[in-house]
Length: 114
Ligand code: FES
Image (cartoon, rainbow, N blue to C red; front, top):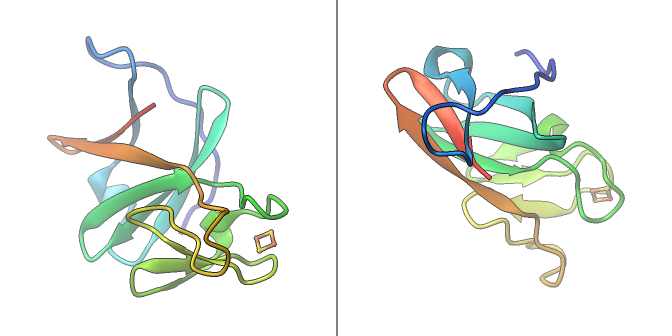
């Protein structure tokens, strides 16, 4: 698993859609942290379905991309706050969700909409 951060350029005609990886780079159960327009985003593959959330935990900014994945949630490596990957909901503290991003698959590419 590579956690190397990469910066990405805009692609196509949709100015808010950024290619962040190819599908083969993020296998089921894996994740990748990417940098898009200065924002760290953690991309997760859960059983072939991709989810993207802000990489920085709203509690104390530990990397959620380094967290433990359990079913469809990620557990922050900082203090174990737990977030739903689909919605960004914080199960530990409801008032502190993490931002989610729309993931678009185009051919072999994974793109994120900002
Ligand atoms: S930094 Fe994530 S739970 Fe504290």
